Image (cartoon, rainbow, N blue to C red; front, side):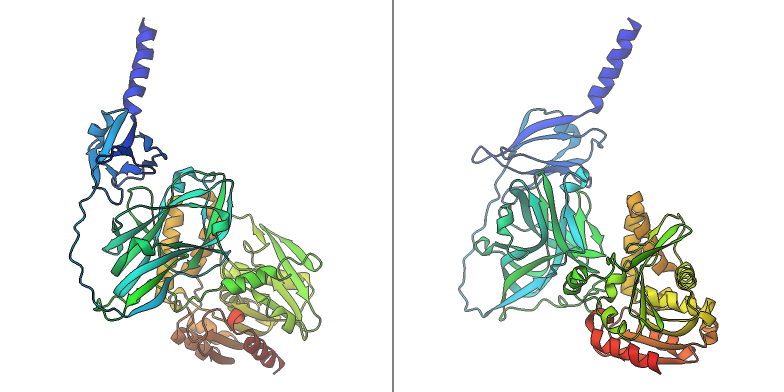
Length: 548
């Protein structure tokens, strides 16, 4: 009998803790079920989507009973009930009241409407939001959004979503929402009716799914957000293009919105702007977190480098085995040795426009820095630019070279400077492109983005992102090269940066001034990505410098 009582107690405890509530959501006026309704808990990441017949089943186990269950559907009054009361009504019917629409007198005023396109237009296949129900089911039903600004009253004609790849055995159900803004985050859904789509592969034309919303008569002014959410699991995966260093927003069900400052989804809209309308003050001001003036759309270059042979040329590629790393490198051409060092998270491919030209005159040794490209790293320690410089020295020794020239872009330039400090007798000349000697030399907006992304990664605590964390940390903590150290470098150094570089102009000038034998060039109208944007000019400048 004692055992029976124990079993009863265990069963009873499970019963009271497992609060699974089922029901159906109906329209009160029409007494018809409402499909694909979002049922969740306010300020929580718990929630479900009802099926096509309005049926749902939500597990409220462990949720504070005083919190509110929320149901929000465009065109209906919001539903809110405490978890405690909601849990008492199993197999329930939830009725939503339709909103009363106030039809105001319309005064027809001649308008001058101008066509515009706003938002993120990149079609890159290298930076993406991946929608994969099989990978992380707990994240699948989350929502992502992008912020927009309308200085004048504007009507949304089309919402465009740039899709890098689509794989599904059946139509994929998704919902669009348009939110007002409050304190810099999405607030209330301003739509009067649901916008849901069953997306199929043939609806994606040239990498874009364009949804005509002209008939919804959506007028906006000031700040607003467009959100997308996938509503039903499917077999397959969808990748949405994303723009680096743009701010996106994410949330799970009715949880708090979070800023993701490293990348934003490629959502853009076609609008009709009322040029005769009144302006909203300061709506066109650029956010401190917006780096679009520093980071151009690189999708074209990313596609080109992927199609090149560099970085994956098995006929010339070799591996140098060192402690904790297999260092991958490729050699092209003959003559005086010239080492190419890429930037953070890059690879040999970044120099796809330099290798063909430079290898006509030099023995080009292109290296994948450890933990990047095809080079591995099995250590559990943080990366440093000194370690990267040591790797270059080990490769120089392996190849039996006495002196080398080095061209380093971004992090590669930082490693080049560390090589010059530690191994001056093995360096002939150095070219740095967008290098820095301490973290504060980087644009503060980019530093803020990186710090935020690091916090996100650390909070996720995902072992698979260990290497990404190390690559972020090295940029936030290093290099730390002093003025006195720069004064000691006697090698000839060519300092290059873009006029709109992520490296501050005064910082680049500081580096050049402290080096005893330096030349400086600031590329007009260029960004941090000179090897991609200005290849012919850069190649010519490098060759001229090395020949002196």
